[in-house]
Length: 158
Image 1 (spheres, helix red, strand yellow):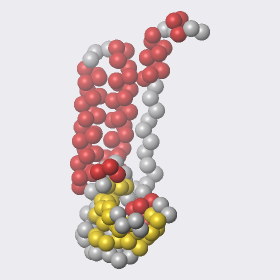
Image 2: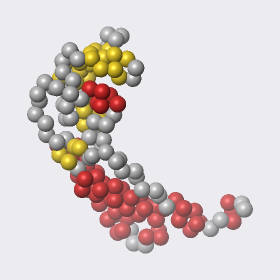
Image 3: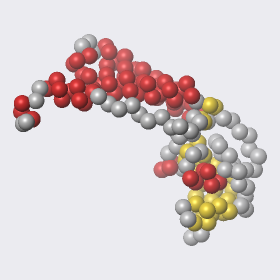
Image 4: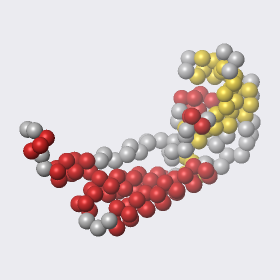
């Protein structure tokens, strides 16, 4: 059937049928900063939901309402399952701390180990369930680990 013969409401109904955002099966460990980010995202989702409702007829913009509802469910679940972790430094790589690595090619990289929702590799933070973090948690300065098939040395822990 030609697109010319499809009803506009059918296209909008399909667009509004958004799948839920996947929720990680791992414990939702968060730093103080990560908890603040979740709460800000939850507030944004509530505001988007209220704005979509205030527009009047839900049929007028079902996609905006579906997106707002989906995000509200996701961030509500993430806030409800958040486990704040504040681990004091003890000389080991830990959740919430930073680690500086020396790679085989001489490059040095620093990473902060955070919760999944606050991880941003481009900004230097990785999730505690990432292969990098799993390989490094518990290591001390001078220890080595294999990351992505390469040996790295821990040169600083904060």
